[in-house]
Length: 318
Image (tube, rainbow, N blue to C red; front, side, top):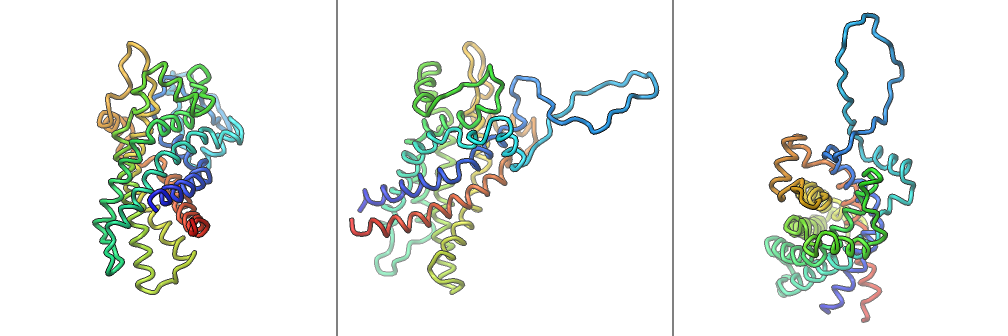
């Protein structure tokens, strides 16, 4: 039964991850907006009308600021500049990440839930659900961190200028190149952030889903079916997005930073990245990409749990 839980969770997670990959890519691109890239910004907008000043006084010209673009604009820009296939950049890393990270966390959570559920009442207290999520998420993240680093870099590559791009061909190529050029420890860059985020997202997502579902059924708002699963899933996705978005922004930037030989890295760690981000862009920068985050977490959680129920039905006789 323990192995079966891992298989069921892994299949559902891979399907959910691939289904929502474009939204995850847009989220990563938005989280990197405003970060210094070392290259001059390219002006993509032009004024509709331009008038020459009537006087000849010297007017200082300030460089135009790069406008912040919303999730729809980011998606349209990716398609226009890189092609529609770019929306699935790094999908091989997503598959590997879900295979390692989500399979582990879903399987462990299911095992702990089974072990800690009161056999008499068939209930599990919220506190134990949160603890189970923290444990399962932390272990899963530690296992899947190399794929997470590769996924972030492959998703972010298209925003860089041609000379700066890493041009990884696949997740295997990404991990191979990182190991050769930056050392094997680079595969666990930002691992503390990954573990912290995974603990938060697993605890908030899985525990809140169970709580919302139980509340809906207990109050008789809906019957146990697709409607209940969708409602509880989206609510759980919203809670997970609010809790984890700041950690996700910092994790994305630390994993994506380019460390050059004999030069100081852009960030010395998670705290340094957070302080520099807040100082340069304000505290709300920690919630960059929140709309695509919730737009992804909602569908991801819905697809995850709906698929999980169907997989369980298919494998019930095994």
